[in-house]
Structure formats: C-alpha cells, structure tokens
Length: 228
Image 1 (spheres, rainbow, N blue to C red):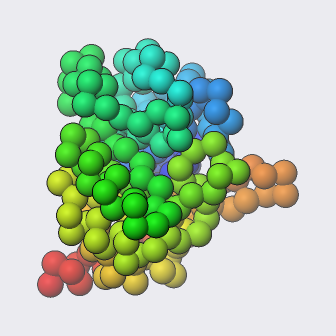
Image 2: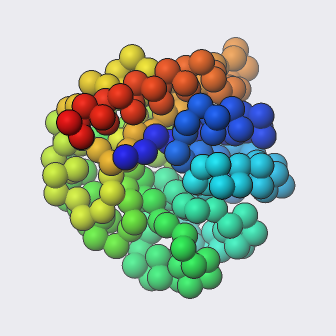
C-alpha cells in the first residue's frame, strides 16, 4: 500500500517528499496541455535523476494521441506513466508498445469518477493497465484530477472491489480526511496534490512539506489499521 505525492516542480521538493516517506512521486511535463504545475522536460530529467531509487518516479501526461508519449518516456525513464487526458486513454496496444520500449514501466490510467458509469469504465481499464487512479473532475482543468474536491467514495469502493488491478484513490485528499477515505474505500494507494500544496494568488503552487508529512503519516497509519 502506497502514498503518492503530485505535482513536483523542483529537486528540493522531490527530495523533501522522498524524505517524508512518499512511495511514489509524480510530475507533469509540458505537452501543450497547460497542466497545473507542469515542468519542462529538462527540469523533469533533473528531478527524476535526483530522486533516483528513493521513490518510484511517475510521469503525468495529457495528449490527444499516443505519439507524443514515446519520446519523453524513453528520455526520462519513469517507473510509471500516468495518462489523465480527456482525449487519449490507454489502449492494450499502447500498453504493449510502451512496455516493449521501456521494460518494467507501469501504465496508470486516470478515471474521472462522476457517476455510476465510472464503475464499468474503471473495470475495463483495469483489465489491461497496471493500475488505475480514481480522481475528481473539473472540466476547467485540462486533465482528470487537480480538482481539489473529493468524489463519491461509495462509487470508489465499488470500483476497488471489482477492479482487476491496483487502485489508487485521489481527489481532494488531505491530512485531515485521508484516514477516513482509506477506511471507507480500502484502496491500494492514495494520492495528493492540491491539499498538500500552497497555492499563491497568481495560481502557481508549491508543496507544503509539513502537509505532505502529515498526509503520509496519517495514510500509513490508516493502512496499518486495515492490515489489522
């Protein structure tokens, strides 16, 4: 069971999150989608090299097809590629090709949980992806997630019970509600971006390491409760 922290923008943030105990650390690269807290591919390389083996490295991508993904993945060599765009979702063919190009990489597909129809969608993608992430949806954001509010945990729990792969819970999770979320949904992992970041008046953000530490501590304590 893992904790995942998004979206990292500096080496210092990455190392602080790893020191705090984050199992997976993610960043978004600039693919023309104008994602929150995205970084250049050069900065991503610097951050991933600094992380090394301290945590799993996750590359967040939003594109309209698979073609823009292969070059940055081969260059950055992430442990996980996270697809969270509205226009392009993973396919069995993409999973096969990306694993041939980058042996050992895992494919994480975002599922926007809006209503009961998300259950069938999640089950489908769980049949060929290594993991899925259940996230909230704000159509003003160019990607599933980063919405800052929780989704329906009852639906999330149904997905966890039926999915054929690992399930990460996201969507407005904070140090204050992550325990309740874990006990309710019982996911394999939990993810945080907005509620462990400080947002500034110009819309930019930086990780709040005290919040990151509290989130990870509370999440891991809840996972221990489940393990009994």
